[in-house]
Length: 448
Ligand code: NDP
Image 1 (cartoon, rainbow, N blue to C red):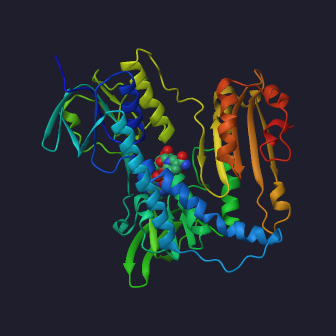
Image 2 (image 1 turned 60 degrees about the vertical axis):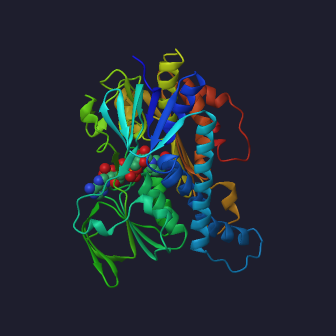
């Protein structure tokens, strides 16, 4: 049986593009469907524009610090339009980069939604195409909680096109997205209230990291309504009125409310019912080769709801291409995936949390090494910001099972620390490494 394509990819985001390009390197004929701009959530509405806004938000503290170091700083102010235009201009530039990359790889791009007719056939608008193998990489979309008046709230997609900076900003949810945007807007000078239904932000991260970061953000002016939920949101002439319940039962007003209570796979228009592809808990079920219940259909990235991070989707997509077209049987390992929260300061982790390590190996076999200190930069500044670094070590093997950090450049530092943790390094290996002094990261190799 001959098909139009060896591989057809649904979704031009991080995972889909990585798989398409890698498959063409092995000589496969590849097509790709995308209904929106190329680059997916990460490039268009996520990691990249968010990180640029994080950079924008860091200047006020730098202006203050500069004065403590002897600089004279004139009047400063933010031009919101200029910032958002610059951010969106960079996103457009990246859309073009992705287009050129796919053109160069000779991937045929179809603009529109792909819909399964059967396991080898898709329609995209008026086009009908067939493919030997099909990769679903459609990502996810924000999900709003069921709260009266929730239609008045915005989602993370909208953060990059707000016409003006909200003076009073409320965030619902304590995950990555909620914490990052609460921090950005707080640092840019908005009055920010974050409503979380737990005692601390960032469930799933190490408890010391959660507590340390939350305390720093509160010291920096963020209002956190912990153990609280929103009962209703009402549009009034003075703004949005929120009634909250729990530890903080109050009525608060906002100019904008961001719902960041999670994301779900974007599966509804795919026609998966025509294929036999199984879904578990709203996500596409896959095996370790990212193969679905239908042998010629694969799925990677957020639509499989494994570890929902861009670099994971990229590795999953490349592993599919290597295995199916490069004869390499490659599996993406979801163990020891590092990640960072781009707050100011950043928080980053790799490996097990203390709680996970205790549960897996027993408390008696786990040793915790932890330091909290004022980095040298803050010795001359009025504002102090303690860093926290932590290693979790299995006593019987001396292996470092987890590393966690809150502090400036934690993401950059943790990328390096992730290598020895992934390789199975011991605490003795860390101790044998010479420190770079004076630095924050040196604490990882000098911890008592
Ligand atoms: P998360 O799943 O990380 O967090 C959702 C938050 O909303 C949690 O705090 C959750 O509370 C809360 N929540 C869920 N339902 C309700 C409800 N009904 N009422 C009140 N609170 C609720 O989702 P995000 O949207 O923040 O992020 C989605 C994904 O995007 C993440 O999993 C991450 O993988 C990825 N991402 C990664 C980034 C990075 O690497 N820096 C940045 C941004 C996103 P509870 O904890 O109690 O369930």
